[in-house]
Image 1 (cartoon, rainbow, N blue to C red):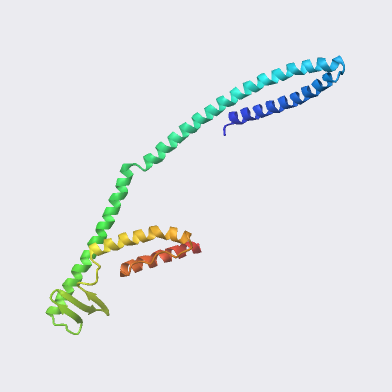
Image 2 (tube, rainbow, N blue to C red):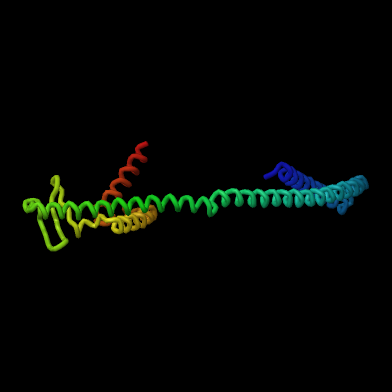
Length: 217
């Protein structure tokens, strides 16, 4: 609220209070005159009528001043709102959004490349194990479907589901799951369970750890 508006409101309130007091005084004088009191009361009543009229004119002036102050403040608020909207929306314009999307595309492409590189590596090493007759480390072989063990870890050319397309599907599923967490927790429920995919499980664990670390700070 501007100083001009506050002053106009205060001035109008003071004038209304003064008029109320004058009216109360006049009402008392009128009662005295009706009761046959002295002429002095009648003369005083006439004087107070004049004072009352002056106060009423001042009230009209105060009301006009208040309207002007309100209009000025409204203009200022409109100008401020227009400026705030222009500044914020300009900062979130298409160029910035496109830049963020470009960054996301680069990350998504990297994820897909890594997933596809892993799948290619699994297939390549599986073929080497078969060529070398490493039957002790090959747990399953059916055409191109090979499951083998390396370093104590089992790999499967068909069922690992860690290729680029599978990882992108995991990301989308986990992103959706995370959008549901705040609403469920607000209702007193736990967040939705992550998908059974190993990467989805790891992403959920990372989120829980980050939130726990944030809450401890």
